[in-house]
Length: 241
Image (cartoon, rainbow, N blue to C red):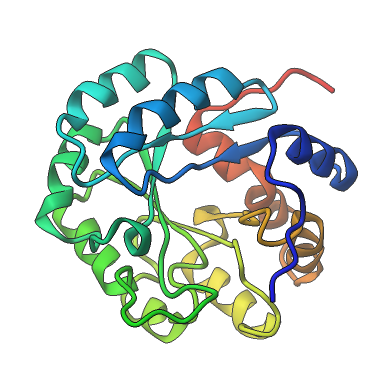
């Protein structure tokens, strides 16, 4: 049973951020059907601010991804989220190719990777499918969530570790992956290609951040994971606080 870290509202997120000492968060919404893409993206444009960085939504059956990507680019939206298990489409399914072609090297694509907190009959986002996308679209800016594949870290080590893509650290719970293995996988992949993430409200970012910072990384590696890597990837600058 997962206890939500906040109420799922923008206001609740900002309160959580203040409590945990987080200046900025990235909101990565998912469209579970094509008709949701434009309304979700309109909402993202409404809520974004210096502290709330919005990614766009896209769906494999959306009729004209290139046109929507042009709109997102004109509005300064830096990326999208793909959730294969909720969108019923593997990352390496040809239905996804128009999205990758439209995204090019201009947009970051965050993939849910691996299993789910609730066991499903079939997981549509194994690390191997993301490795296939990386091979077919080498210039795509890929972030594979959950250290490349929630609950599938043997496969992550086989097909993703060391590749020229990013892994995020959302939902890397101590009961699922030991600190020793977490540290070893990050070092093997390269701390310069790893992004701190929490997947809030599924978990509280403060607790996950403390765990990552307690591992024996160098100060430079900790700073890179905490914020420098994502700032470089998204070309972010922040006013002095």
